[in-house]
Amino acid sequence: MSNVLTQLIAELVDGRLQVVDLTQPLGPATPVIGLPPIFASSPGLSMEVISRYDERGPGWYWNKIELGEHTGTHFDAPVHWITGKDIPDNRCDTIPARRFVGPACVIDVTQEVATNPDFLLTPEYIQAWEAQYGRIPVGAWVLLRTDWSKRSDPETFLNVGPDGAHSPGFHQSASAFLAHERDVLGVGVETVGTDAGQAGTFDPPFPNHTTMHGAGKFGLASLCNLDQLPPTGAVVIAAPLKIVDGSGSPLRVLAITQHHR
Ligand code: MN
Image 1 (cartoon, helix red, strand yellow):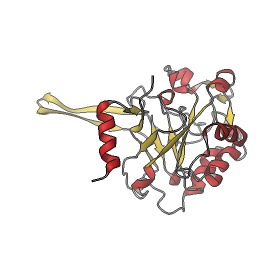
Image 2: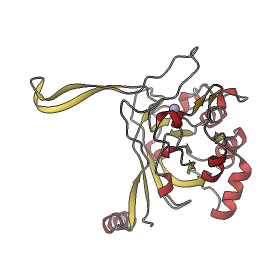
Image 3: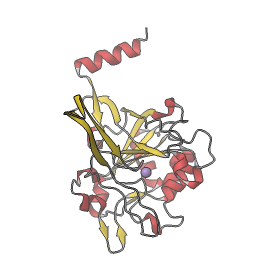
């Protein structure tokens, strides 16, 4: 019997540890990323009742759902991007389960994003965070707290203007630093995708996807409740559906953390 697991359960039972749900509700109203019309678009969720205690099934209720893999709170596997297409164990069904669990490092940039929705995280900013909270450990989930998830209206959440979307993300050098200098599991964001709104215009386009997935790292998009996590000390479990050859999937992202406030 492992002491650490016994203690985990005891502390969950007595409330010293809590489980924080980092997942947005998933339904037909869940906003999806828009792409220029020359590219194929990903459908949001549609849902149809199979039966609901009626003549189609008198004792049971169930639905049929149809959706793009990258809808709502979701996981990006390395195979999602062309740079990650030849990496071993790069798909939802082949990534070892151990790699879905890691310590969370929460970088709070809410102040910066409040005045600049196009804010990009830089290595300098990460190193300043490390000077305060310690070095990002190998195998961490790095979560970018922007409070973007508090934009409950899809229009302000996607924040699309005449020149495209405006939402925060990563400078390519920050993605490279996290992938190569810190060997993280991946990054998580509160926005609709792990690249900034304007990232289609960057060089290379979508530098976070390009860099992270090219290094075999993961992405988590449309997270929420990051304001309930400490900068360090939480453990995040983010396991996608085991879709055969899947490029990503909606998932329930859970954090175990010390109770605070
Ligand atoms: Mn995605």
